[in-house]
Amino acid sequence: MNSAILTQLFYSFCVLSVLLIIGVFLRSVLKIFQKLFLPASVIGGVIGLLAGPVLWDGGGIPFPPEWLAAWSALPGLLIIPVIAAVPLGMRYGKGGPGQASVNAIKMFALLFAIGGVQILLGLAVREIFTRLMPDLELYKTFGYELTEGFAGGHGTAGFIGGYYRDLGLPYWESAQGLTATTATFGLVGGMIIGIAAINIAARTGKTALLKKPEELPPELFRGYETDQEKQKSLGRETTFSSSIETISFHLAIVLSVCGGAYGVMNLVRKYHTPILYQLPVWVYALLLMFAVNGVIQKTGLRRLIDVKVKSRISGVFTDYAITASIASLSIQAVFRYAVPLMVLIVLGFVFTYIAVFGLAKRAFADCWFERGLCVWGTYTGVFFTGLMLLKICDRDYQLPALNDYSTGYSMTTLFGFILTPVTVGLMLNYGLLVNVLVQGGILALSVILLFCAGIVSKRAAD
Image (cartoon, rainbow, N blue to C red; front, side, top):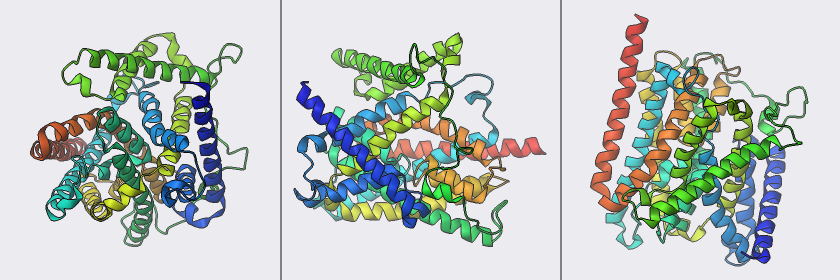
């Protein structure tokens, strides 16, 4: 890599930064973006897409091809440290995942069950359109974009693109573009439908606390806080800057693990180790970070790790990944698969809504609507969407839903990262039937766990 390539990469990052700032400004002044809680990264990415040559086929702002190529590849690279950072700072034992409550386990089971519903729906849509419109020549993994975009968000679009590219699949850019599209529709539609559901539930007495829909603080809509007394800290400064900046220290750990993961992956692929050679690099990064974090937690180094600092670093990577993913979105692929994609999205909203609130009502004795709302937000947008919808119903987070939701989501994220390459591998190597059987089995086990945990908690209460 020469200096000219590095310079172009630097320029492309500078332009992404400008798009992010534009997104922040538009979010702060336009009510429509505020009401939908659209992140600045999504707004900036859409502006880049609308203004650039991708949409206008060479017209618009003449972003150089090198920038567009970098933007297309960036999400797949930046998502690796985001995933690798997940276990860092995680404590085992008291206060850790092992102390999850029964309701948190039920939230985990519900989240996993909805994921199974979306995957099976995606596979069904693919099979139907393969027969109805064979000329489309839908690729093997079409349909996964529903849960990858709805549940994973724009960050997962980059992960999917990078994973498929590493597997040598020629349609990786199309899959990345379609996943980013479903993520955008999911984020906007999930918020609109969620707010409508809150209004209906409040008027019909289904909400635990909310009797009349209230306005959230205006700063939450604008996306920034001007009152210094209310501005939160980024985290603890665990190191002295005379030695190393705290952010640099955390970033160094994350990127070192990513580098080690590439080394392990290359070694595995060199010797063509069965099954393992097909795993993406972030799986190795995740497992390696679990080992590194285990060592850190057993020593005094654990006091040098601050989860909030780590989360801010992951947030930076995610913001740039989302902006780059949308700005370089493959419009041709979206137009080509527009009909099955729109059917997938519409049916995704319908089936997800029915499954989420239908199961939540039967599984939880208290604040079932609020718990279901969290899951709805997660499986149409991102964790933050579920959090915002919950805040409308439970402004001060008085209900136990938030703790159960956070724990259940963390458990789902870890299992989801591990299962994604497995399910995609099944589809690529063994076809539709085997994948449907496996996904159906996972869905059935999730529902069984959901209701078994409910029986346990009911007997404990009695």
